[in-house]
Image (cartoon, rainbow, N blue to C red; front, side, top):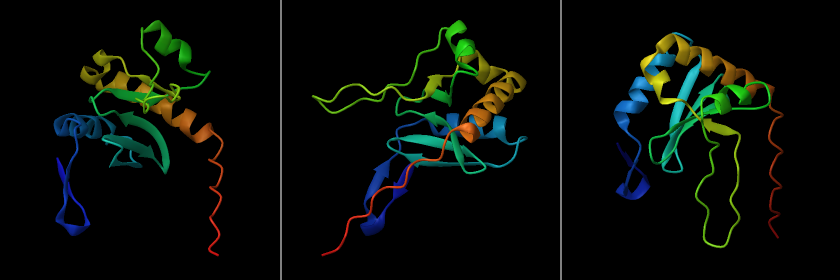
Length: 135
């Protein structure tokens, strides 16, 4: 998928466009889902809260906390650790790999997605960024 930015510069989204469409189709019956390209991947939101990300290698991750972590651990899933610039420590994020079999099981996929919605909606809002003062 190519995205045209200001100045006619083209950026290629490395994630699988067909996979984005497949995930969107699975989530459509739920409603309130939006998505957009971000950081070389793709993010999914439910009613304004990010609950899933498709990384730049087209691996889908759902948001996880103590309420659903055991389910992911039992499935052998791994936590999302984005690549960091050289010299920076790895950063664990609250997203875990969605078991691949769910991409062939729409009802079970939606059940796991709903649990991720609950996690996303229960998370505290992000702290506002400090604004730089203009001198």
